[in-house]
Amino acid sequence: MPAGTPAGTAATPPAEPPPGPLPPIQPPPMKVPVVPQLPAGPPPNIIVMLIDDMGWTDLGCYGSKYYETPHIDQLAQDGMRFTQAYSACTVCSPSRAAMMTGKSPARLHITDWIAGHVPSNGRLLIPKWTMHLPLEEETLAERLKTRGYATASIGKWHLGEEEFYPTKHGFDVNIGGAHIGSPPSYFSPYKIATLPDGPKDEFLSDRLTDEAVKFIEKHKEKPFYIYLPHYGVHTPIMGKPEVIAKYQAKKAVGGHSNPVYAALVESIDDSVGKLRAKLSELKLTENTIFIFTSDNGGLSHLVRSQGWSRGPTDNSPARLGKGSAYEGGVHIPLIVSWPGLVKPGSTCDVPVITYDHVPTLLAATQTALKKDQVVDGESLLPLLGGTDTLAREAIYWHYPHYHPGSATPYSAIREGDWKLILFHEDNHLELYNLKLDAGEVDNRAPFDSIRALQLRDKLMAWLKDTGAQIPERNPKYDPDKPLNEPKKPGENKKKKQAE
Image (cartoon, rainbow, N blue to C red; front, side, top):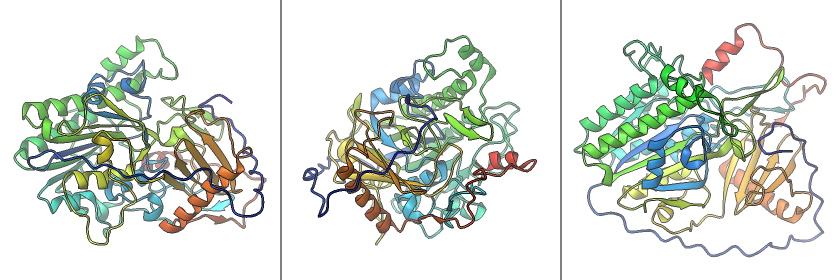
């Protein structure tokens, strides 16, 4: 099966290991991260730009020959580009909660997009998970305020209704953040309750950027933290007509061929360019940490009642995309620029994940964790400082849900080059060597059962440690019925607005 195709069959369980204890594959190396010396001077400003549904190949600096992203490419030239960056989940809300707290979605029990998707005839019953970011959770914004930071959330929130909006979680202002997961329109009037409409046909990506620029100008004399979660490049796919026309005149390259999606990607690139120009104008570039990343993989395929349908982008060589258990669902771009510390034009091949950002930024600003605060991430300062070492051995995922991107309830672990996926419906395992098999087409679990079972044991221990919710058997499951019953009239429209 070629990489990135929706087809695939469940693998057979690995053979039983010989009796007795499993022999170690090799002793884990001793890892002692080297923490770099931080730049002198005042605490750094922080801009975190979180893009919605941007795939890891949707940028020129990550290999796209169709999408044009000169400003983001320059950001990578001026900073560090991570080649093995991962989202905390294959969908958005859990990754956003992880970005705020430094905790894994499994620990937070925020494990699906809000309000999620519950099939009418799943083999498993979905656990009763949390559909908001609890006020009891300590966020990065709340911690940074103890250091005198001005804080702003500008863009998509999608972590609960009004009582859980950004201003309840340590942000001084909330511009554009609401319970919704996608904008009614990218052109004004936007019909977003927390964003006053601009002039007719003003573009949403531009408007959010302008709001961020105003915040920088207002708070240039003190440290600021801007969380800028763009609604782009989520559906509905829209773009400026003149930019769409430019891409209509270009030839498709590989799986990248949608001119409207390309125009939406370019609006994000424009945002990066405008923000960096303002930082340069105000002489704030040297002391600003600029993080560019995505909340999950690109939207490449969906399973509909008529079968598979193609999404607006392609994540090859990664398999599938948003809402899947495979690399296309969680492999994302990550670029970090901090001229005071990060070597320009550098790359990092160490696997990192969304919940690393909180401990990284707290360490960078020398801000202590709240007493007894638990974080699942690890500070990336050693990597940003030029070493290739982190203390941890593995990163993990847990998605006890069904998704039209093809996911059935699963958990996964990546350790070194190896990734193991445990599918909860039948407990079968799939094992891939990502260095040799980026498209996850060669399941090694039947041939390397000892490694598969060792990784499974580590995964099960992590699920227990985080208190992960495990789906249970559905006593009413009918194998002769489809996973989802036919939708009622109007139901699809409501669903699209929520996601």
